[in-house]
Length: 199
Ligand SMILES: CC(C)(COP(=O)(O)OP(=O)(O)OC[C@H]1O[C@@H](n2cnc3c(N)ncnc32)[C@H](O)[C@@H]1OP(=O)(O)O)[C@@H](O)C(=O)NCCC(=O)NCCS
Image 1: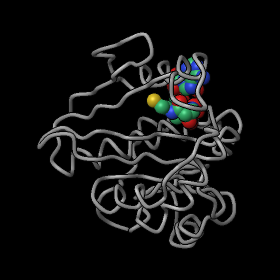
Image 2: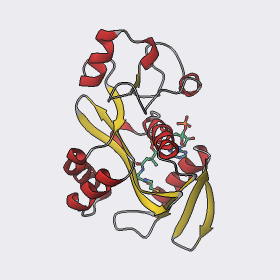
Image 3: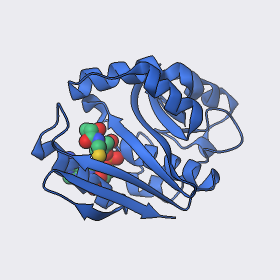
Image 4: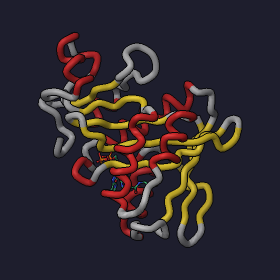
């Protein structure tokens, strides 16, 4: 998983034209590298779910049991404290997705209710070793589906370089990412950009 071009020879753009299911069906619903879920047989799907072999990346719903691994990821990648108990409450009460490679949690998005029809995406992160391989894009795609399935009409999030452990450069990269995902900055201060997407 380096340039996102898988053994199948397909590009990330090819994959994005073939979105994978997240809601319904198998509990672990998307395993996108190097072949799509639809292209797998029962054996390779089981391997994907277990995070075994070439089909190592699994995108699945987050669950409360992921809280400590997520907190560890935040501490390691963002150099700031993370409250596993608080994260567990988010995971138990609102949509979330995680990315798992070879059994290791390497990315996540979790959320909380902002209003009856708007979901606040609280935190989005991909481990540095897995960036620019479309992991974040697949997390967003899966999370947008979950957000819609949960009945929300829009989602918001905030990007702020003033968070502990963040830099202006890093915030700028994240803004480029959200722009690429089709999100819009709807409000900004010196430090923060509120990003949103209407579904
Ligand atoms: C932002 C983040 C989640 C992106 O995850 P990722 O897996 O690296 O992103 P992807 O590979 O899916 O990128 C998808 C597209 O976003 C854009 N993008 C991603 N990172 C970018 C960067 N550093 N600079 C410019 N564009 C970028 C590109 O258009 C990219 O498509 P391409 O690689 O085909 O050109 C990841 O960099 C991260 O965790 N950063 C630190 C934490 C953070 O800032 N979180 C967001 C808080 S608001």
